[in-house]
Every structure is written in C-alpha cells, then in structure tokens.
Length: 463
Image (cartoon, rainbow, N blue to C red; front, side):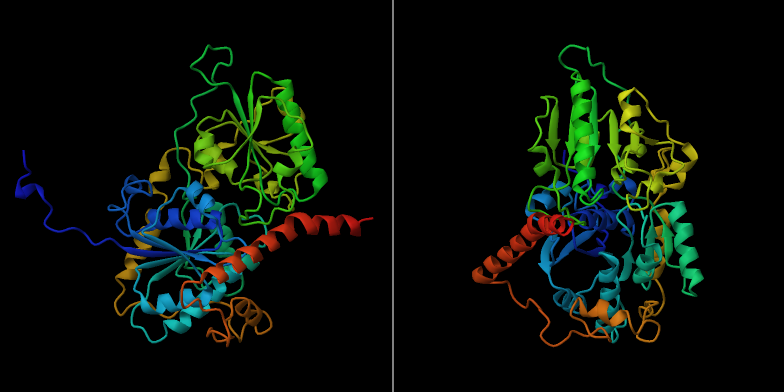
C-alpha cells in the first residue's frame, strides 16, 4: 500500500552543518562523536551510529602532522563523515573563511586550539555570522590543567567530561580573571554498549566463551623499557597461571602508526622476546567491541577504564609502578579500582565507589541519555542570538602573553595577529605523486627515529 500524502512530512528539517578539525585518531574519534552528540536538535536516540540522514552534515578535517591518522586507524574508529580530508592550518582557515557551518569542533592539542582561535578570529573579523566554536578534552585530565585550559579559552563552549572537571575548569578560569561561562558539563561521547552481565562459565561446553582479561595499553604510559617490560611479563604470567582464561593485550596502533601520544617502545616489539602461551593474544580494533567480551579490564590509567566502568565491567587500575602523577593513575584515587597484579592473581576484584564514578561523568545509572542536553541547548541559544555571535576573545593575547603566544601561533605558521606567515604551507591543491611520496617518506623517517633511533640514543646516554 502506498503511503498517504498525510504520512509524508510537510518539510524535511535542515541538517545542521558541523566541521571537525582533529590532529590524531583519538581526537578525531572524540570530535566526530561529540559533533553527533551536541548537534542542534539531536538526541541520544539519533546518535552517531544512526543514519547520516538523521544526524548532522559532518565535514572532517585532519590537521597534517606527525599523528595524522592512517586509513586503518580511521576505519577502526568507525565514525563516518560526509567528507574527510587532510589539511594544513592555513588551508583550514581559508576553508572556514569561505564556508558556512553551524558548529565547529576543535579536537586538537591545546596549542592547536589556541592557534585556530586566533586564526579564526582573523578570518571571521568581517563576517556578520560565524559557527559556534566547541572544544574540550579526549578523556581524563590529569596533567597540565591550567596550561591546557587557558590554551582552550576563547571557544564558545569548553566541554568538561564530568562534574569534577567542570568545577576544576571554572576554578582555573575564575582564578586568572577569565570568563568561565564557556565551561559546559557533558560526558565522554564514546560511552555506551551493553551492560556487563556477569562472568561466563569457563567450564561450560562450546557455545560459551572463556573468561576474558583485557589489558588496555597506552602509547606513553609508562615510558621506560623496564616498566613496559614488567607489565608485559606480568600479563603473560597471568595467562600462564590461568590457562582456562583468554588474556588479551589491547593495542592502540600498529607499528609505524602514531596516536595522540608518541610510542617509542611498542609492545609488539617487546613481546617478540617472549614466548607467550596460546591463551595470550594481541588485539586491535574498536575498544567498545573488545569490551563486549571483557570480564576484567586492567590498565595503568587509560580512558578505557571509564568506558569499562560505564558498562559495570570489573575494572582494575594498576598500582604496581606506584600511584603517581606521571602515570596518571593518581586520577583514580578514591575510585575503589586501584590494585596490583599480585592481588589480581590472588583473585581480588575491586568494587568501584559509586559516588566517585558519578563524579567522573561515567553515569552508569542510566542518566547518560541527558548528559549532552545542556550543551545542545546552549548551542541552540547561541545560534539564535540576535545579531550573531561576538568575536572570539581568547585569554591569551599579545598583551597578556607576549612571550608565549607568538611561539604557539608560529608553530602553525601564523603571525602574532593570527594571519598566515609568508611561505606558510597552504596546500592550495592536491599534492602531486612526487610530493606524496616525499611526505610519506618524511613521516616514515620521523616514526623510525622516534621508535628506533631515539631509544638507542637514550640508552647510550645512560651508560
């Protein structure tokens, strides 16, 4: 039966246009998922995994640099965009001067956000309207709090992933006399998945998977060969002690790829020196899919711990190397999740502190569906503001930080006033075959230097 004319909507609502600028795979994941969560008129029911016809029109831009994600990394993230291309900072600013968007998400390191805020302020200075500019953090904020926050100041919304972060962010801004009204509490955009249903019986016959322990590795935590080898040895020992279990080492990137942080000593390289048992495996892929089969998540301080806690999966933050700011596991003080490998081998299972979990934006109580309401409402009000939005006003200016700001802008080929410096790479056209080969070779040489040459030089220096 054909639908009646009365069954057809009178008009199709206009899809909001959102641009996301990211500088690594993890920031692309955060930025793209955040874009779907905060899109005007969006709801959690029509989130990032729904049809593109329901969500916003999303254009992705990858800032060219050492951590520009590879096609495999982008595929692993699993977030689709209407368009996706690699750009220089200057090319991106030119695009923002020519195109019209409703929202712009800056998913960059702090210095990149600050440079773009000044560059955008310059290209938009003669426009009567501009997008709402949004930025924030990929995960747990456990270092450089003041530095990172002040570099992000000037965006219309600075997203805080938890109530605790929102309080800290406002305190920093107010403490230096900066406007704190941009701070908006949300949650991590990639939380979700089915709640944990309990352990599977390892003695059950086929059709039931074995009890699965997952260690979520981090590229730069810990840094030293000694510490990384220790953690790897303990994981392999756990696999040997429990042959009935499946023990997985979840890796962020394959050799030669870079993520948000530099990885000088990949676990893939270290494991070659060992002879792990058959129940030990290296795995890649989307973290959510790995958590679907996880019975125990172990990490030093990965944001994966928050994903796991959100799903009520037993979660352990290791204390073997100490509870230290340098490791980031100090953030989990009070969580109830701190434990050592010795305790785990003996059968200990931490119980998370519910009050601590609630303050971290994990919202395992079911309130996640409303976590982005405040951000969406704020964006809608800004878009409807009579006369358009005011100019961007970062805290750092040539007056407030004359010895700091110019260097940050120069790294992105911008002058102190936000205009491109002479000779800045503009990427006016698609690079030719020779230029592409040279660029790939340069990246390969950089990654080889980081993962091969630098550790050797460091060891020689310690002799």
